[in-house]
Image (cartoon, rainbow, N blue to C red; front, side, top):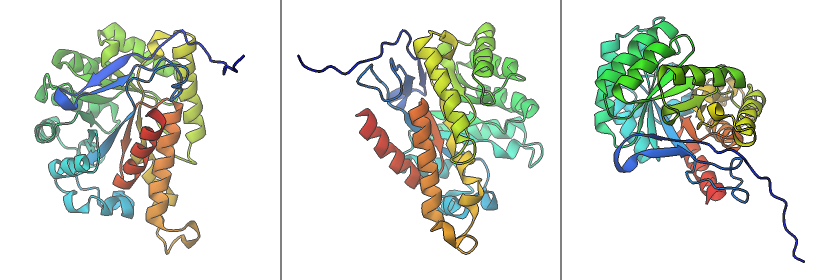
Length: 314
């Protein structure tokens, strides 16, 4: 009698969310087993990679190796987005850093104009993120939603204190939302419930559980995402059966191990190599925990992770 590997049966499945329009639209989710457990279920839509584009020159806010990769286009978000697509980005995450009230405090109208300009110049899905300032994002993201009406962009981060304004705008102009909560399964579920009560369909919600980088909260992030997927697939918790988005780049490249130069920390090895590997390893860990869409920063990290996705997902 031939040996048969025991297989777990799952009673739930991850719902699908499609972002963007046209030939380059992306469908996320659909898994019927744990991440990459293709011997127990199906993974019809492999995880995807978005790349980060700021609406202003990041300058010294970015670690040297990450900035060097985009320095020639750093002052032009349109050219920057196009360069990212050439580097392998399957979506663009436009970060409206200039709207930060503690920084440039750009107007919602200016942010909306930038988003519209970037959207017109790319053929891949667009994700538009504010600065996580609850009040300002509630002004900026609805303006962006109106300017990009019916183009199926993704708005975020949507939080429990501003979900009504941003969620209503997403509903009115046919966009998706990225529901952000602070690394907690119950808070993530509650925000999904609130968005549903507002009228936002599950097919338009991505879960952003907040991401910790390698060595900076990765273990906790991983365990929370793991519990999310367990509840979704084995406990039939329909409000957790949604694709997960992880904003990887900002979490990894802000830590000292990525920012310290070769002269400052020679014992850590080459700064460029260590930063690229820290981002790639963080990304792969999050994929194994259940991530469906990663927002990344360095093109070499993207290449590494896309290769691993191809190996694991086939």
